[in-house]
Length: 245
Image 1 (spheres, rainbow, N blue to C red):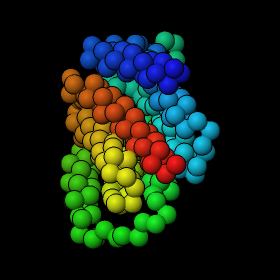
Image 2: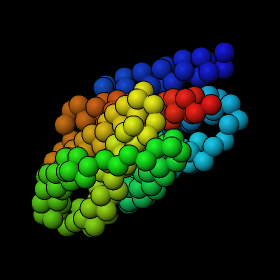
Image 3: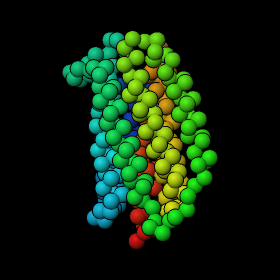
């Protein structure tokens, strides 16, 4: 019953968040978004049912740093006049705090994937299968970096963006490396979740770093892909746990 109630709350808060993003209601987003990741974490915690394997502990830590990243990015100004929300001052440097928090979260994702495999798995994936991840990394940096170099303030983000993009694509690649090392449902849900996470962060990079102004649908598309990714990765790890019992 607790799990069902938590799932219901995840749906309600997520839909409210998406509505806030779609209608550009920044106050509603500010009030709702901090609860979405904790609710998904609670769902994961209840589903684990005290089975604290290494991958479960690591996934919870990924939740923690994802949440810190969420809070940090909520305090990043969207425009020059966007300096305060509900009496809380915004600052552009919260972007780096958010980027750093999500980078740590990605490292915990990678560690989680490496643990969430069967002990008898020995197959190795042909390295050529990783080429699409490298190509995507090159293309995204090719899109984002040139505009950053033309902006004196954004130029400070050059190295952090390169590092984060490298870790982000590594996260998706490591998720792919679990192929035939866990049950198919766990692999596909987790891998697709990782890929959607890449899409979500790519949307952030393009809209808030490459373009002069974010597109009208930037916030809603980022939120939908981000929440879906976090939930799918959590569910994928849970499916691995169930098959390992």
